[in-house]
Image (cartoon, rainbow, N blue to C red):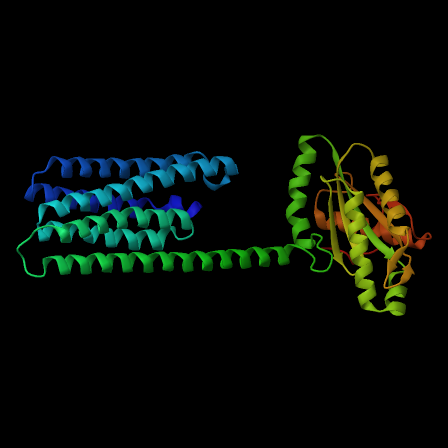
Amino acid sequence: MSTLFTMRLPIAGFGALYGIVGALIYLKWPDSVIAGLTVAAVAVTAGRIVLINRYHQAGGASQEVAALRRWELAYELLTYLFAILLAALNVRGLTAHAPLIHLATISLVFTFGAGVVSRTSSRLRLCMVSVILAVLPTVAAMLVHAASDHAERFHSEFFLLEAFLLVAVGAMSLQSAAHLYASAVEHLSTKQDMAKLARYDPLTGLPNRLLVREAFQELFSFSRRSQSQLAVHYLDLDGFKAINDRYGHPAGDKLLVEVAQRLLSTVRASDLACRLGGDEFLIIQSEVRHRDQAELLGRRIIRQISEGYEIEGATMRVTASIGVAMVPECGIELDRLIECADAALYQSKARGKAQVLFCNPDDELLTGRAVA
């Protein structure tokens, strides 16, 4: 809905057009109703501009959803009010039996309809209701005018034809709005799917390296505010290659999905579990007050991962080795932390696997294979 609040110029421009047309009609036909409608339309236009400015001052699209819904409702109501004022100008103008006045007011309806469809089709209800409020009363007034007693030849027929044309154009506008809305939804859905594919592992559904990079700074900032630490757990499955060789890659993929589910059920909602690739996973544990908390989580993960898996009628078993790097003890840069945790993992495997080993920041790193 944020696009609605970028329409200062079109709103101001159309409000000015209404004011100019209303002023010209009043000069030709000094009618108090025309004057009142023109003043009201200018006031509503000013109110719509003020609403847009206040929306941006309040934080724009970054506000809570409930607040955004209130802003949208206010925008809708002012738009509907303007559409009613536009229809009222046509209804009043048709009572004058003056072709020039009618030409000016009906031109505004067509311009308004085109503008609403092109600018607000992303909010289908707003678009459709606005067009209906502007068109239907105008059509009704045309039908009444066509039925009035007038000496001009074909007077009724032309007004009936114009009413039909306005209905047809209004219907086509609504159809166009629905098409544009469907296209916008499809585009946004595709964009969201692409963003998800870029940040999530397609096999397990876990976040990938890109999302870890984006989330790490937020988690680190929170840890500084709460005066706590982070623990970066680098996890590798022991015996996974043998399962792939014996049962095939499809079975191995199913096992990886099961491992991912067990990781998600083991960590807290405030922690982040991701898949780096192959059988390597990364856990960023937040709100760590002491190294023992990180070791406890690591051992719990090993215990959960080490339980048997029933896949394609076969019982499969793997274990896990974990290297842990503490933040900020081992640094504050993600690449350095992953490299440090990977080095600890390497040592863990060398000592017998299925172990948790912490990285000592003073030790020389043994491997750099895991830098994200």
